Length: 445
Image (cartoon, rainbow, N blue to C red; front, side, top):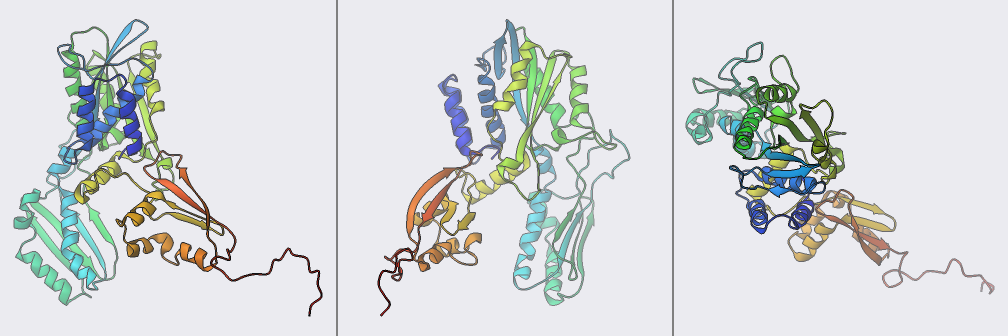
């Protein structure tokens, strides 16, 4: 998720001190529902309300002809704002490349498991060839919808391709489709390795006023226009896994700055737009929460920051530690939904540090082991157990546990560390020893 489950629950608890019971229950119901289509949007709403409530008193969804998410007062000024989380969900649905890629992987997996070695490559064509400038038709992949994969792609010809792979594993093979509604090449090279996917970026914004960011702003503007209340109007836009909000302007696409500034020029009643975008920083393979932060951008008609806008600019600093980028949060949500783990946050599973007198590991790993949820053989296959069981080593050394404690992680994670302290060899489970500190007062016989 974007934030740890513990952080989300804490925000829900804090919000309940001022938010009515009905909307609180609605948020909790949505967050607990694995079939909820937009879980990141609900998480962002809870987080934005929580952060902003630390600076101002919020009137949530008052009836004003429409129901804007936020109304508050600062120095006699009224601020009316909407919250929206934007994603490329529609574009992914129309271009199901992830599902197609996964399907190819599943189809060749038996061959790989039986010993086939080499590299695979999937190249997908596009409906409209890319132009050399912006304001061109948005890219569309030339693949069918998921329900037509079997009829169009995985036909008898593909079965013959798999048979050829199995019978001639040392030869290059390729499977091609070039029809009006499908254009792809799936190839195998025994001299290569890994898996590559080649496609156009179908989520790039090529038209300034027709993309997920502009469309979401326009929808919220329409809602704010219906609110029968004078005040400063604005929109808070959160990243729900949308490429557009992360983009910079380039020769073949519009950036978020271009789109928002053009929107403000075109919609005079909107005085500000705030964007919240989780990003990963540091070493690309280190996905720990400490390597994530939220990039905040404020677009305003005011050259200076007026007092009524200060809470909007300040509240993101009070948000909990972000745990993921929006894209990885979406992938995590999809995995949890598919594997029946919707109510489980990320654990430190498999992590451990060992020294001469201490072992530190995931408290959830230990609890699941004792509960029988984590099998002993699975536990012993964890990375830190791969070479040798550290607890068995301590026992063989005659060391017993002298103390245990729980350590909370500084990033407010959904797991804790359990730390076992060990003493010197204990005669309860080890041979007797001569006291090295004792003085020799008698002569040797």
